[in-house]
Amino acid sequence: MGKCLAGLEELFRRLEEGLTQRAVIRIVLGKYRGSDPEIQKILIRPVIIRGQECLSFVYRYSTRDVTRNFTVPEGIVEIRSLLGGEFKSAHLFSTTETVQAEITRKGTCRVSVSKATTETTSDSAHDHAKERLIDPERPFLAELGITRGNDQVLPSMSRKWKQINVFISLFQGALLASRIDRAKPVSVVDFGSGKGYLTFAVYDYLTTTLGCEARVTGVERRDDLVEFCRGVARKLRMTGMAFDSGDVTDYKSGPLQIMIALHACDTATDLALAMGIRGGAEIMLCAPCCHKEIRPQMVSPAVLKPVLQSGIHLGQEAEMVTDTLRALWLEASGYEAQVFEFISLEHTSKNKMILAVKRAHPVDPAPILKKIQALKAFYGITTHTLEKLLSS
Ligand SMILES: C[S@@+](CC[C@H](N)C(=O)[O-])C[C@H]1O[C@@H](n2cnc3c(N)ncnc32)[C@H](O)[C@@H]1O
Image 1 (spheres, protein in one colour):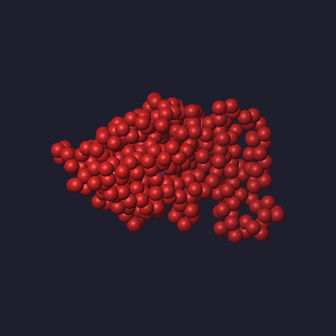
Image 2 (image 1 turned 135 degrees about the vertical axis):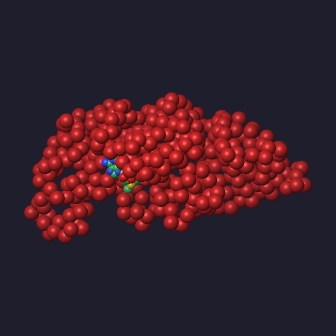
Image 3 (image 1 turned 180 degrees about the vertical axis):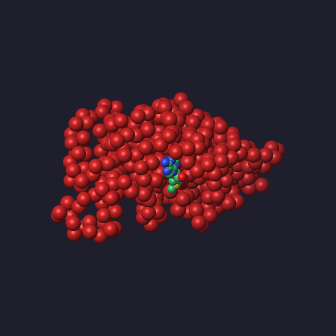
């Protein structure tokens, strides 16, 4: 028994140290030996609820998940009680190590410690993706065809998987730093939601990881995808999710809290940004793609002619100018806007992110509007959808 206690104390020492250093990613309790035939495991994650650090416990049953949140001290007491009772194994995953504790039939406890696996360490290509925020065992991943079995990411979906995790990491950073009150339902609209990869990931993150109430709506013009997503949400009882069929152009959105638009083609990104600005969104995350509007309008300034005579350079320049104009319009509309690499080119060619967070105190837009006009004049740009939408 003494040996067992010593092993468990080692686990708890590392857990408490990891929590203090904010290095803990998750704890999984398994090897259930009790009488409930339905329970499979318990997944525990650190979360912030109403500004307080907590531990969120997801009790995974064969057909449902039950979530309970505890303060950190209460959570540690709960883990002690579960491990002293019917759960016989614990895996602690942190950014630096993986600790495995197994309680044998004889009541002894074996503890092994290894360096963190690639799942949990920082990724040299992405400072944003220091950890996997989405548990590969989440049922929506299997429904969307990202995983098979319990948690195996399909090789063909590894890029999407990476993208989802990087996106959720950015989403988390923006949300936790924002003024959004997570004690109230958090609302998100995803324009051009497609097959719902990010829509479901955001909903799952908000409800399961953060323990918030969430209303997440996907807007998509392809009816087949809308039907598919509705089916998945129904099946998994994700009751705060909705999918609206239709074009972003015709979408009537009211006030918005968080707007996302990942790879919404061409000017659909401008439509989404305009709706976010008009709806007073606190956060907007956009990964633009298919920049078609500005390129045919661009007149190469004389000095840039040798650069822009090649199609590839002209395309790249048009993309940079388009997204710079978008960022400037966001700044002029009261946001702090950043444009940065979303995910490296090694994983996808659609690799840019525009992140806009509403400022508490808007800046004077006049100098920004001047920069916009100067840039347009320099390249001979006459039409820009976002400008048109904001001016109408
Ligand atoms: C490249 S997919 C991206 C899907 C999803 N956001 C993701 O990143 O996984 C772009 C989606 O936007 C949809 N889309 C493009 N323009 C749209 C518009 N104007 N209104 C509604 N949906 C649009 C397309 O049908 C497509 O499903």
